[in-house]
Image (cartoon, rainbow over all chains, first blue to last red):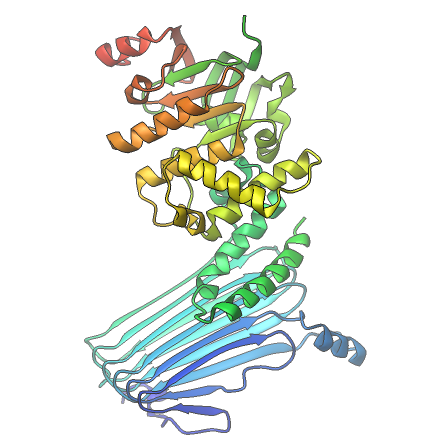
Length: 252
Length: 248
C-alpha cells in the first residue's frame, strides 16, 4: 500500500477552506501575537490558485506581550502553525511562502503538508527566516505525491539565518513521491550572515551594524517581494524592517 | 613635488597560514595614478583586500598610512570615510536591496560619521541622476537590486557609479578590466579618467595592459610572489606586454 498520508481523505475540518474550481484564494497573514492562522487546511480544486504568505513576528504585538507579562508566565508558549494543503483538482496552483524573525526566547513551529492527489498541479513553498537570541524555530515541510499525480511540480525551499550561538533552527524537509513523472525538489539551508556581502557593504562606508540590517532585509526580501498588493507589501516591509532593526541591536 | 597620500612600508599579510604579501613598499603621491601588474597569484587582490580591510586577511607586519592616519587600525567603513574606495573584481549581489537604498545608506553613513545631516531626498536624487548619466545607466537602474541579474559590464559600471557617488581620494581598481568588452571597458575608462583630479589618486590593479591604453599611469609596478620586483614609467607596461612576467 502506498503512503499512509495519502490514504487519509481530504476531509473538511473546522478550519478548512475549500477553494472552488477556478477560484483564487490569496491571504497575507501577520502573526505577531498569540493568534495563529485562521485556517489550517486548504482544499484546492481544479484550476484554483492559492497564494498564502505568513509573516511570523513573535512578541512584537505590544498588546499580546503585555497580556503575557501580566499572566506571569515564565515559559514562552510555542507558536504552532500547522498548514495542510490538499490539491484535489487538476490544474491547481498553490504558493505558500513565509518569513519569521525570531528574537529573545520565542519558539515557533511551522509545519506544512502538501498533498498532490491528482495530476497536473503545482506547489511552490519558500520559507526564509532569522533566529536570534535564544529563539527556537522548527520547520517541517512534507510533500506527498500520490501514485496518480503525474506531471506534478512541487518545490520547497527553506533558508535560515542563525544569528546567535543560543538560537536554534531545525529544518526538516520530507518528500514522499509515488508517481514517476514529476518534478520535485527541496532545499534547506541554515547559515550565518555572508562575510563577502558584509565586507562589500562596509567597504562603501556602511557601518557593520547597518550592514547586518541590510543583509537581513535582503534575506527575507524574496518572500516580501512576492506579495502582490503594493500597499500591503510596503506596509509589511516597513514592519519587518523595524523588527529586524530591533533584532540587530541585540547583536552588538 | 607631490605630497604623499598613501605610504605602505614592508607590508606582510597572510590568509590562514599562507603568507601572500612578503614585504610591500609603495608610496602614492597625491594626484598620481599607479598601475600594479602581476601574474596570477602574485598577491594583487590580497593587496587591495588588505588596504580596504577585508577581515579574512591578517597583516603580520608592516604599516600603511593614508594622509598620515594608520589605515590598518581602521575598520573597513572607517577606511571608506577616510577616502578609500575599491572597485571589486567580483561585485557582490545583494537581492532585495535597491541601488538607491544602498547608496543612500552609504552616503548618509559617511555624513553621520563626519557630523553632517543626511542629504535631503531632493539633493540625493539630483546626485543619483547626475552620476547615473555619467556612467550611462538608464533611470530604472536606481530601482534595481544591487548587482542582481547584472551582466559583467553592468556590474563594473555599477562599481564606477558608486565610485562617482562616494567621491574617494584614493580609488583602487581591482581587475576592473577583466571580463569587459571594448564598449564597457571604454565606459569604465572614461569614468576613471573623468573622476581623476589633481588631488585624487588611483591604483589600477590588473593582469593585462588593456585598461592602461585608456587610463595612462604615472608609475607601473610589477608585483610577483608578494613583492614589488620592479617599478618604472608607462613604458614598463609595454615591456611586460611584449615579454611577459617571466623575466622578473
